[in-house]
Image (cartoon, rainbow, N blue to C red; front, side, top):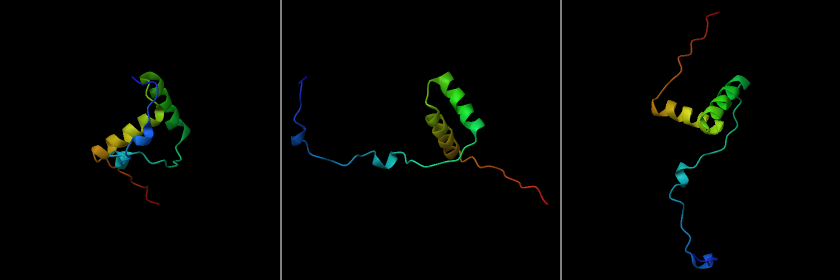
Length: 73
């Protein structure tokens, strides 16, 4: 391998994976939920934010929907 490479001769091209990149958003999540995923993170060695993302991705892939029923007043 060379110790240095001349990158000025490289042709630029678009990232083919750009559509798959993650987008940063702000969520308000209860502390007990964060603690749950942080504990799971310590057990698995996977960052807790990745675990939350994996869980949400699983919900999307399996088309899970919440059954929310508000009490009648």
